[in-house]
Image 1 (tube, rainbow, N blue to C red):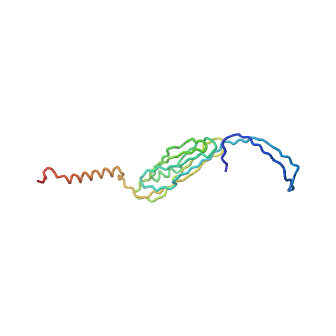
Image 2 (image 1 turned 90 degrees about the vertical axis):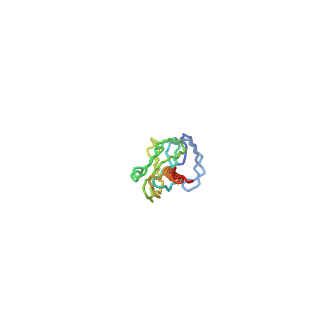
Image 3 (image 1 turned 90 degrees about the horizontal axis):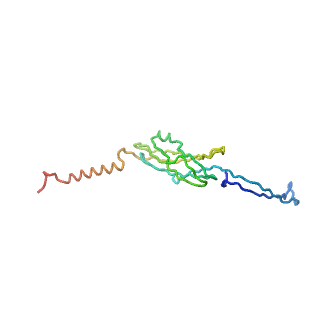
Length: 193
């Protein structure tokens, strides 16, 4: 593990003295000092996290997941974000979109990444799915690729009734109410005296 250190050049002065030689105390040593420069180069480190890594969602519903991306490197860096199992999820009936696929963050800066998901429109479902997210540092010249994988578990449970979305339910209720209102009003030829 690399401890956090900002990108910089610094001078260090090291002083040493021999106090023991081959297991025996040594009193003739005089302190020696050496000064040298240390260059802390840019390094990449990325972190993904979520306050809710497990969600229960009904079939056919849209849900937005929030994942926190943090640049734990020591300088500004660009990151690519992707859902690595997007094709598999789409084959299972999901719709998955990322609001951001690439971003730039300063050292120790965080950004919330939104993932919009619509669950499959199965009539009945009681299945678990993972949404696998990968964030990759695009820092060039380091010779290594720094990335992190993160999974969110989605429990798709419940029943889906096509056409019974909330707006259609309101319209259906309006028609039923209009029908009851029409029954209560007497027709022109049926007036009571």
